[in-house]
Structures are given as structure tokens and as C-alpha cells.
Length: 161
Image (cartoon, rainbow, N blue to C red; front, side, top):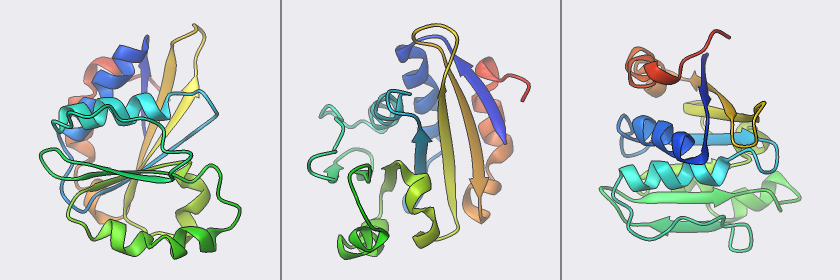
């Protein structure tokens, strides 16, 4: 587990950009945390780093949005889903096979039906209004082999866990 602390929304977006620099097509990133913890801000910084020109917004009413960048960024928000089957019905398997990176907000809720190969990013509210603690946990082989690169990229934000 990697723990990091940001001081502002822009700082959270900058951290996300560093994570995006290590992303590869086919990656899955689960964003978890309380309402208002910064999951969409993280997705915005991540997308900007991959040259997504369109503003990434919370896909709560649409559930899934695809953005073009260096490679596709698929942004999913499962907050309003009542059953895991709904995500299966949306074609989550096909989303993961589109040759891009899939970011799933509230992803910890649907983790049981996803491949066990992802990066979980848990965002927590901090002391100050915009301060956040992020806990990054690689699950499975693809992100686990990049854990040292992640630590190096996030060095300025690292905190003891």
C-alpha cells in the first residue's frame, strides 16, 4: 500500500497525472472513498495527463463515458447501481477490452465481479477543506510490477501509513 497526501484539488489532479503516466492500455483503476472525497477530480487529472481534451465529469446519470486521448479513457460511475448484475449487463467485460484505461468510481463496490488485476485508489477527506489522503493498493500482476515506479512518481506526496 502506498499512502500519499495532497493539499488541494490541483494537487490531487497532479498526483493523478503521475499515476496516469504509468498507465497502459488495458489497465483498470478503481476509485473509492466517501462522497466528495475527490474521485472525479482524480479522474480529471488522470485524463488530462493522457491528453483528454474534453472535461471529464461525473458520469452518474449516464454511468459510462468514453474519452479520447493518448488511448481511450473509459470513466464509469457505479454509485447509482442497485445490483452488481447491472454492471455485467452494461458490458463491463467489453469496456475493459477497448484498449484503454478504465476508471471506475465507487469501484470497491463492484470489485468482486472484476478481474483481480487493478489499482485501487482510496481517497479520504483530510484535515483541511481540500486536503486528501490517498491510499494506492495494487492488486494483481499488472500494477504490482509498477509499485516501485508508483512510489518514485509520487515521492513528493508520500506519507507514512
